Image (cartoon, rainbow, N blue to C red; front, side):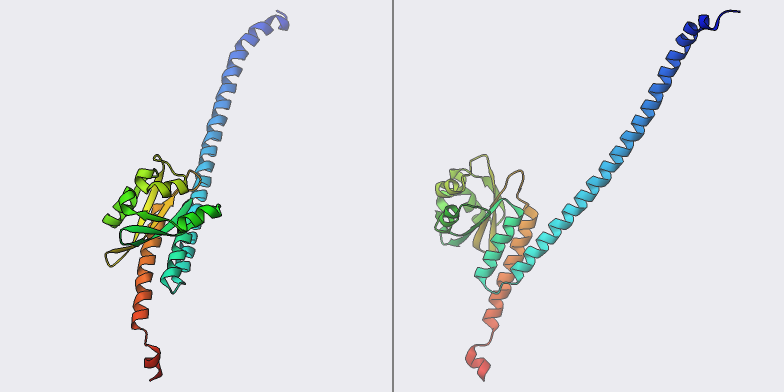
Amino acid sequence: MPEESDNFPELDSLLDPAFEQFRCEVTSQLGARHTAWLEARLRKERGEIERAARTRASESLLEALRQIRLEHSVTGIAVALVEAAGRFSKRAALFIQKEDRLLGFRLTGADDKKQRKAVERLEIPLADAAGPAHAVETRDTVVCGGGPGELGEPLATILGTAAEDRVHLFPIVLRDRVLALLLADGDEQNPVEQPAIEVLVAVSETWIEAVGTRKRTAPQPEEAAV
C-alpha cells in the first residue's frame, strides 16, 4: 500500500486547478452581484439627486415669480426681474431701450461695485452692438458672443467677456415695442438657464401690462371724492 504522502503531489495537482476555477467563479459572481447592486444604487441616488434638483429649481423659480408679482411699479418689476434672473445665471444686467440706444439700469451677480456703477452709467448705441441690435429688431431671445463686435466695446470691457463667451439677450416686449433688454451670462458652475429666464421675462411683461392698465383705470382723487 503506497504511503499517503506519495499521493499528495498528485492530489494537489488535481485540486489546485479545480479550486482556482471555483474561486474565480465565486469571485466573478460576487463581482457581478456587487456591480449590479452598485449600478442600481447609483441609479437610485442619481434619480433622487435629480428630483431634489428639480424641486429646488421649481421652488426658486416660484419664489422669483412671487417677488416680481409683489411689485406695483414698472421700476420695481424691472429690479425684481434682473435680481430673479441672477438666480439662473452667473450674472444678469438690465438695459432700458431709448430710441436708438440702450441705457444701463442694473447689474446683479458682480461683486465689484465699480462694475455695477459702470453698467448703470452706460449708454450703448445699437449701431455699435450687433447682438443687442438683433434682439431688439427680432424681439426674440438671442445668444451671441461676448466680444466688442457683438456687445459693443464699452460693455464687453466692463463685463470682461470675450468673443468665445456666450451671452444671452432677452428682450422685454410690450405691445410689439421693446422696453428693455435683459442680459445674462454664465459659466460651468452657474450656466444660463434660458427656459427659466424666459418664463421670468414673460411674467414680467404681463405684470407690467397689468400694472399699467390698473393705473390707467384707477379713479382720480377728485373722482373718488364724488
